[in-house]
Length: 410
Image 1 (cartoon, rainbow, N blue to C red):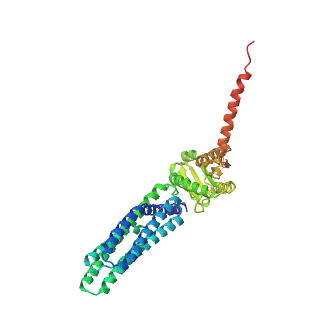
Image 2: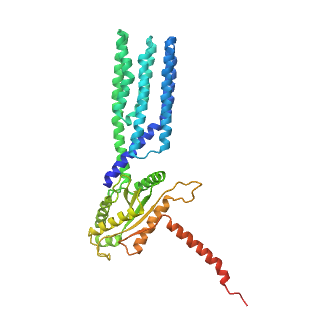
Image 3: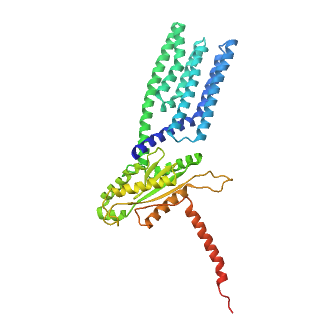
């Protein structure tokens, strides 16, 4: 379960990078479309009458309006800081939709303002090809959409050339067909190349985020997910809980049975973590050595404690023999902590930081060890910090009182 989740998260990350790249290039696309539209409008204005000038101006305004709207979408996209698959797909669809509308407007010029002179016709033809070449990055999202945009841009002007019914325009229509087929073949090759790169990138990212022994997420993936879920719980005012799990007397187990058996032991423990991290936002990972960590967004301390205790019992019931443990079977100690992240602003001084949750879970795990192991302990987020502050204040008070207790010489 954890391996499948890691694989899914990896492809989501790659998809997110693709969408980010497309939106990052929106500014360049805006200026490119605007410059081509300005030059083309000026050229066509030399071949249009006064009645068509108004429609040419409207066409130019539509190109600029759709380009500006694309810039607005880009701003909103970057402000949202998209992380979930659902939102990534949503923004990808919006990008595809606006780019398709823009290319439909580009395609309409082939019929509405087809110039009479061959030189201007060739310039119009080259301008439309330039627009399609600038849209090639769309292949990263959808090959079918790009082929659709090729059709709406080039098909109108091609049909119009055939409708004129003369030799010169038949030749131009044939040239358009050859150029379209060449562009189709090139885009198909680019798509295959992008797909291979995407697959390779996903595989490399998955290897970097997966523990090679247990095949569950590693600490790197866990810390990335922790930052993401912390921000989400902060925005939505939800609790977030954390479990830190340590295999009891694992060094003694390794010394007695060898590292091979120790690895098998860790694999069995990791396989049971899927019973805790069942929801999409949950994540269980190997934190290092014989330690595991479980992230539980939107989970209260009571529910996290219940899940931790259920997991502890399931490991004990595996019945893995451990003669060097006082329980004679393999057991785990679990630290549990939970908190409500809060935004840091001037009106609110009760701020909780991510490190406070991690430290509290770590302190709770060592508390479980001190209590005899094979148990679950909790510590509220920030309790250790409060205890340290109280301890420091007590030391200060004690130091102030010491001079008064020193007997004065006679």
